[in-house]
Structure formats: structure tokens, C-alpha cells
Amino acid sequence: MLVRIRPGAELTGAERELVECLRAYPSTGLALLDCRVGDRRLGAVIVTPRGITVLEVKGFRRRQSGLLSAGADGTWMISDSALDLDAEPSNGLTDRVEHGVHAVRVALEQALQDSKHVSGAVVLVPYRGVVVRPARTALRPGLDVLVANTVDAHELRVYLEGFSAGPPEWTIDRVLNTCATLGGVEVPSRAELAEEGFADRRSAQAPVVAPVRRFSEPAPPPDPSRRGKLVGIGLFVGALLGILVLFVVVGVALVQDSPNSRPMSDTTQTSTTRAPTSVTPRKTECWPFQPDC
Image 1: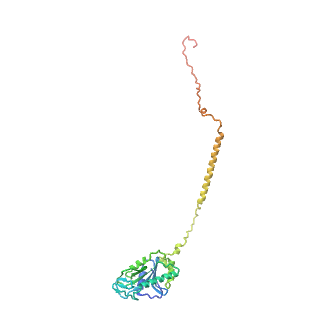
Image 2: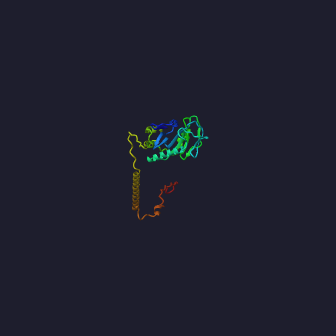
Image 3: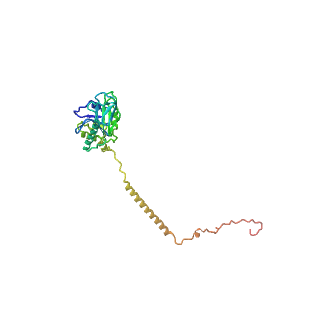
């Protein structure tokens, strides 16, 4: 994850520990440390492709371990002891992170940007080797509490991957506009954001240039509608010619046919006269002294 710290910022020990955790985080994101929105100081603002989260980072004054809980009156406890922070008391900690989220949303709306998918969380950084587990992870709708340090940053990674269920709409241009809106931080370059994994909508919408072809392209096929018209005209002409030939044949047959046609019996009558046959004379035996022999 990219990390940018405001020039001249004086980070607390807990914030420096958070910087080490974020720099080792493998997913896409940009962390802005010690942001200034109006007259309000924000511990960290993290921009991911799915949204923005505002973090209030607090460390411990002494080694405390146990089960963390937040009361309805704003009192934070670890087991049976009050939460002992290194900078300020825990009273009003939830209100401070909620005010930070509101300040970021107002700044985005004034810059005519979408202020949805802005969340917030309190990050408690205990001493290394100390085990602190929260009894609840949701303070208010959209506000969570996390425990993380360089030894165990699992909760922080899970939170950054799922704090917003929105679509990946934070592109490079939108991240740059967000940095300009918050102000006071070193703005990363487009190349750095692209290498980090943010999408570049300009390159996605850039026209694709077709490669130059050095061979002659075949002629385009004829228009299907024009081809259909030609086929229709040909069929119509063929039908007319067929009808004309039929009329000619019928006319010739009528002209050649005689009005007094012979009956069928005359044409079918066969001759009954027997053909003449040659008779071979029969030899007669003659006797001696027989007359006329």
C-alpha cells in the first residue's frame, strides 16, 4: 500500500507503528497520514478502490491486556480497568472519529465529488506482545474498533478488505481529486497509482488503433438489400416470360386444330379386308393314256 505523510507532520508512536503495518499491506490502497480537513486533524485517511475510511489512531500509555469494551456513556474499558491512552483520555473517542468522517464527507461534497462509501474506525495500537481483543467491533453504524500492531495486523487487513461493499469506483483520477480535496499531503503520480493497482479510466476508454495492413483488402460484399432487389426483379421477369411462352403455345395449338375433327371411331377403325394370298398350283399325277394330262 502506498503511504503519504504530510510534510512536517509529527507522528505519534502508534501512528508510526500503523505506517509500518500499512506499508506491508499487500492490497491496493493509498494511506494519507496526518491530513488536515479545515481545522480538524485526521490520523489517517485510507483510499481503496471501493471507498474511503477515516482512522483515529491511538496508542497505550502502559501495557494493558484483556478484553476491550466501550460503554454507552463513551467509557472504554479493558477487562476491569479504564483504557489508559498515551495522548488523551478515551472519553469521546467515538465522537471524534465520527466527526472526522463527517468532515471528509463535507469536503468531498463541496468539491462536487461523491461522498458515499466513507467509513470510520478507531485503531488501538497496543504494546508488542500484549493481547487486546475487542468485545464488540461495531461502535455505531459505519464505525468500527480495531486492534493492530506490526506483530498482529490481521484485524486491520480484514477491515481494509471489507469495510465497504461498494463497487471499485475509485479510479486514478478520483484518487487524485480526493488528495487535492484533503490537501496538505504529497500527491502520488499517476504511474505510482497505476502500479499500485488503481484503474485508469482514461486508458480503458481510449480508442483502440487498428494495426496497419500492408495487403490489399478484398472488395466489400454487395449490399444485402440491393442483392435482394435484383433477385426479386429477376424472378418477376422470369415469371412474365413463362406466361408469355404459355400463351404462345396455346395459340399455336388453337390455330392448327381443325374445326371438323374426325370421330374417334374413324381414327381407330381397322381394315377387315384380307390380303390376297398366292396359291401354289398342286401337281397332278398323270396315268398313261389319261386325257388332258
